Image (cartoon, rainbow, N blue to C red; front, side, top):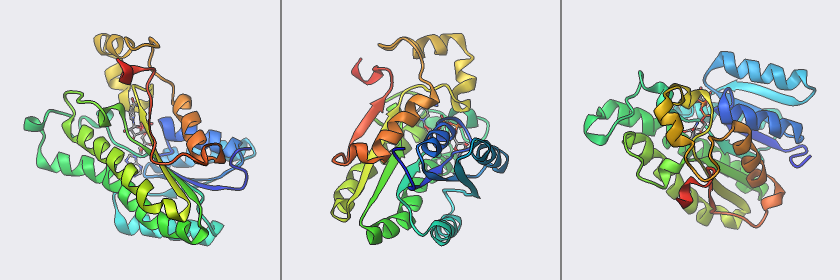
Length: 255
Ligand SMILES: NC(=O)c1ccc[n+]([C@@H]2O[C@H](COP(=O)([O-])OP(=O)(O)OC[C@H]3O[C@@H](n4cnc5c(N)ncnc54)[C@H](O)[C@@H]3O)[C@@H](O)[C@H]2O)c1
């Protein structure tokens, strides 16, 4: 029960890594807020957690919309009175290929660039902007940002995505520095390839899948393996850790 009675907001908790974290955090005693823009998935995860005897609430959220974010955070505070954990996990990537182009810079329309950064980077900024004042009053809180190995390396073919994730890495460091004095810790996970709906399309291409599997541990990761890292960084088990940029990637960053 490493999050006993803690209130934990998880963005993008209707699928993949966020869903795995929501289920794990709930099992560890947290009251989980599923901040997700996909209503069907958000409600499904909420129902599954409650059916297992744990606590969760779905709040429809678009992390890129300031008004919406502000209203969600104030509803959480009205409902629970506090926020202990914020897992900034929501993101848009390769599965959105038809919506926003994942491409090198020269082939990336400005509109797609803005939309990708608007979710992946502005989303972290907005959720944090309205959560940190609550944590400052409490004099405690843990924020975990979900970046990507793309935030650390120049992986070709997804330049806006890569820039957004690099921004999340840099923002993590400065948030840790600025808000440490309020006992707010801010850390960052950089997942490698994780088997979620986001990369299902690319994983179905054998050549790409083989390449992803060529890292030191010889396989892609499972969403639960990001959830356990997020749990560690969210809980008091990591009470003296802040500003950490943690690859969880089967060793790819070491290659
Ligand atoms: N899967 C990978 O290989 C991989 C690797 C590195 C980093 N990541 C990052 O991990 C995070 C989780 O991705 P995943 O792999 O679980 O993918 P996923 O597509 O399964 O889950 C992402 C979730 O975020 C939600 N979301 C997207 N935009 C949103 C918005 N504006 N507001 C609220 N919710 C929104 C989606 O509806 C979805 O439920 C993302 O930030 C992603 O960039 C993924």
